[in-house]
Length: 353
Image: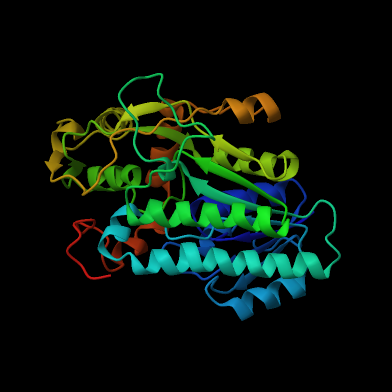
């Protein structure tokens, strides 16, 4: 199967590309190489005869059409997106253009290609989204997002992803385009761009800098190891029911403070501070993000019951794997820290769109 992956040089996208190639699929990686993308994420597969890279922006409709015509994919896995909530608060415009307009361009290019090819059986547009479209949950452990949970996005990022989800469903209902959708919980693991919580905590800690926690750290997230997510995405791409959506969760609910404390404890064990103190002493509570959702939790029973998927990595296992990867791969992350905005407080809403 030939798969067109958008955003394949990003964190989740590169995990999907590596896994797909390891299973014998041909992969066309379409990526604009914006700030969070890194072709080094694909160094292990870049020389494979199964891999092809196309640098293009999903906002460029002509370029997308050309790539469809040239490569004639059997499947689209659409991961390209602006994804950092804090950046969406400071500058929502890029999120509207990439996540909404870009998805529209992808849908139209896919529809034109699919129709022109005689609507071949097996073609599918797999749209990868987030649990943040559902809004925020109560503290009740029984309260979880399922596929039928009403959308209630609270940030420019989640609103743009909710909009893209609705477009995908509309193209299926209106034009018959074969689609599947997935909504995932918070991803973490190797190769994650160092602006998200877990890599920020790791890199600040080993640099002996304050570890920022928004508010009191009580916000709850369900943590999904990226390689588990990649497995689930390929499974949905291959066996998911057309027109269906699937929630993908890690079964690892933790508060942000618990995640930070766990990282500090692991680092205390495998790389103790020179001064003998715990890394937890670096924790610094900062003003909360505007509109910060209290809790996310995924009900992943549909993908389990229909496709037989469950996460295989506990958050404790995943955190240690991730920490060791960052400790061993300074050459990957060090140059990224020089990028404008990294290490600065984002998400205050004080910057113009």
